[in-house]
Structure formats: structure tokens, C-alpha cells
Image 1 (spheres, rainbow, N blue to C red):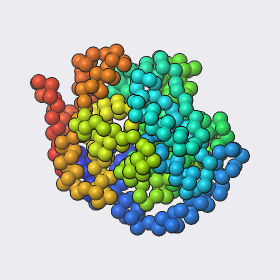
Image 2 (cartoon, helix red, strand yellow):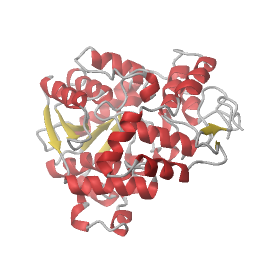
Image 3 (tube, rainbow, N blue to C red):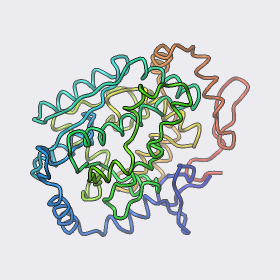
Image 4 (cartoon, rainbow, N blue to C red):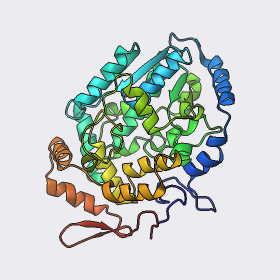
Length: 376
């Protein structure tokens, strides 16, 4: 395990590859391209792209997937008020047991800001079964849910005849998931290769016993379907000089976004604006930490370091203190939802513990072998 020499990205992130100087893809892009880019020129490129799709056979110029959170709120307002487009917002809602009151308030706030919005929800029985199956078999309760969330946008785009999908960050440039890299910094054609989508394949759900008729909403449309419908995805983050977690959160808060109020120790949410529509994401971030040695605190700190908000040394202290932390309440709520005991939860987590990075002590305590910032 090695860390990026500029930020605190470990080389254990799926899909990443450091350069010969030991720099992660996100830092390589940010320091060598982003801060030197001509964003006036980039905006002209965006305007040229939009001419192709604006009023292209649909009442709506584009479609944006939203949760009502920091990124989707800022995007929706910018697209409408800065670009002059008429967007259709699409929200795939979590079931009642999972969605937070904060989440319902935030999506309501976004709608009240004046947008046409399609809200969909999936069959609760299939959703709950897939959550339980994802956790017990893959130690990723969101494996199927994330496919459904990502798939809902292009599925609605095809049904409404909307040819342009506007997405936020480019995972290749801003997170280091090189599998999603397109022909240009704003080309989202390979979003389907993101680690959470896996090309849109849902055969694994059929293999796990789910009926084909129940999993259509979880299927990301094929490349052939994209081409037939003439759909293009553009990463808006590439056109914004100040795209970031904290900037998006600050902007959206001024438009009514409600932030998370729970403590850092309970959530690892340093700025209180991550995945506000539900809280079980905290479990996945903890499990990701035990699998790969990084979680949400790492992502916060990496961006903070690149933007000069914190030093690398300050980031190390934050990660050492808060990464992998979670409130017992969230674990209990999750266990009750999928009907397992706390002991079953931890037994399954320990099965996927990365023994190269962590040691499991006889008393059940998990301790890291690596030194944050240095690695192994």
C-alpha cells in the first residue's frame, strides 16, 4: 500500500494507477491541468455542445439525476439560470425505512425551487432482498441499489426522448477511477464502467435468484440503446473551476439545503453534506475502509488538500481520528431492516477484512497495520 505524494489517496483504490512520480490520477489532473485551464474557453466548448442538444425534439433540453443534495441542487440551478436550459430532474427515492427526513425535505426544497421532477421508487420487497443479498454475499448492501440509482437517469431519458444527460464530477479526473475516462474531460460515455455500475450487467442478480421481471429498473441501458436514442453524457464538473464538495455544499445551503448535524465520530462526514438522503452509506464507507484502507474521510481530505483548505499533515490527523468511525445506531437500524443480528453483521464484516492492511485482535478489535500517509 502506497500513498499519493501530494494527497492521501492510496493505490488500493479500485481502478487507480499512480504515475512514475508517485502521484495519483486526481492530483496529476488537478495540479497539471485543472489549475492551469482556461475556463472561459471550456465554457465556450460547453456552449457548442449544448447547441447540438438544446430543443432537440423534446420539451426538455436535458436530464439531471438528483437526490436533492449538494451536487444536484447546484447543478440544477446552474443549468437553468446560467445555461438557460429547461432540465428534467429525475430522483430515484429510497424506501421509507431508509430515506431520512432530511432527504425528503431536501428533495422537496429542490422541487420548490421551480423544477419539473420525476420521482420513482422501486418494489420494496425486491429492494430489501437485494440489500440483504448485497450485504451477505458481497459485503456491499448498495451493490444493486447503486445500479438502480445510476440506471434510472438514462432509462427515463430514453422514455422521454431526451438526448442529453448532465452529470456532475468526472470520476476519472476527480476521484481517480480511470475506467470511466472518455475521449475528452467532459465525455461521460464510459460512466457505465464506474466501479459501482460494472458496465450495467445485472446477470449476477439473476444468478442470485432474482426474477428477470423484477430487476429491469436495475439495468443500465446498453451502449447500443444509448446510440439508438442518440444519448450523450456530459460531465459538468469539468467546466467548473470551483467544483468541490465544500463549494457545492455552501452554494446549495444558501438555497435551502439541510445539512447533516450528527458528529464526525458517528458519520465521518467532516462537512456534513455527503449522501444526505440516507445514513446507511456510513456503513458502506466503514466496510470500504476495511477492504481498501480508505473511506469517506479520505475523499474529503484529498479534495481539501488539493484545494488548499487543509495540509497533508492535517489530513493525516483527521483520517487517523475519524476514518472508519460509525454510530452503533446506524448499524442497528440496518440490521433490523435486513433482519440480522449485530453479531451476524460483524461476523460478515470480519470475513472481508483485508488482512494485509488490518489485524483482527482476539478481543475483536480491528487495528490498522499501515501508517496513514506512509502506507506499508
